[in-house]
Length: 432
Image 1 (cartoon, rainbow, N blue to C red):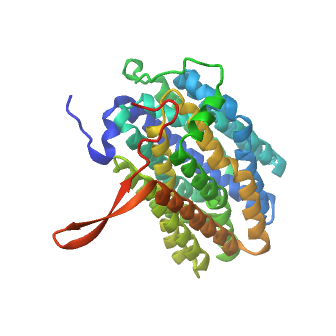
Image 2 (cartoon, rainbow, N blue to C red; image 1 turned 90 degrees about the horizontal axis):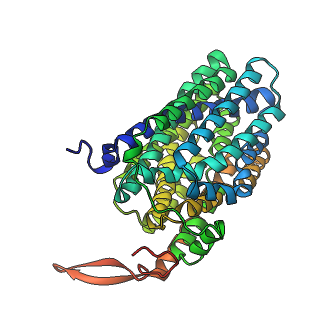
Image 3 (cartoon, one colour; image 1 turned 120 degrees about the vertical axis):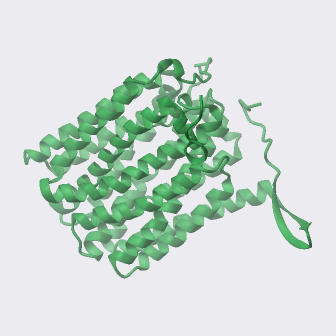
């Protein structure tokens, strides 16, 4: 059969992947609409511009990741991922429905939003590893990095559309209506999962020894210096740098004195860079830690610039750079880990990756929210810049240790070539 897509979009040759990513795109738009509406509800209607309250909700949504890590990794490796995802997606839709009904009835209180945030966080914690690794069943092994990157493109393309729509819908109908629309959007991904061609799914190796469970994942990571480096960089960036709901909402309200529309537009500005970043990674056959190193430097610089911008227009332009660097880093990290990990433990390793990347968010969001309340949003962005530079230093240490520079000559010009010395690292489940 003739291939319709090549290069950056090659994963779309799979019918199952096309169906999956279409359903996820609709659902992701609804998710971003709810995020904006929820932050605005808390920041403007339930509190008086209290960034700490927004930080608490963020913390509650990510706190369950560590507690549920043993089950989420086990579920991703042992359960039928398609059926499992239908269950978790339906459950997330019900939480949006419940919060929407409370908000429209006028009964919603701050503690309600906290409670629904915690419930949503628990469901997302067990959904995410299965959802991230499910792409390996939809495409060929060599297309996994491309499929992961296109997944992120879908997520960030929705970030481009969802916040902008949400800003106008909040002004017209309030946050409650946005929550109900998000609840309906989960139907798209459930339908996509229901109509997949089961005979065209790629069945990966399942673990045969269920005795150790998650410990196999930790044992695997312990022998992989490259994955340990990625996890350390992810922890710093995701804990102290990716607190965008706090950064952007407080900049929009307290610094630029804007309304919901400005908040939505600023989020969409960042999404332009995010989509560009994920498409860039999608075009890379084999992302490398060098790419992570460069993207964290750019992230630190762009956060520092964002903290210094004098108005909403220039801040929005810098947000494009922030979104670009952040998504190159996170998408390439995910692709690198999935492609280099043995399929027998992939679900558990991805669960560890997700736990590390979001596990520090409860602490980070509370800290960033408090800094924004006491010293202002610009100082909070400064912490994000520091996280980028520190992560870059960790990446540089890995490159210095496991790679060496070689000097060579070509047509009279002096050039430098990086040669890997750690390509054949011995570790359990080593892929031959």
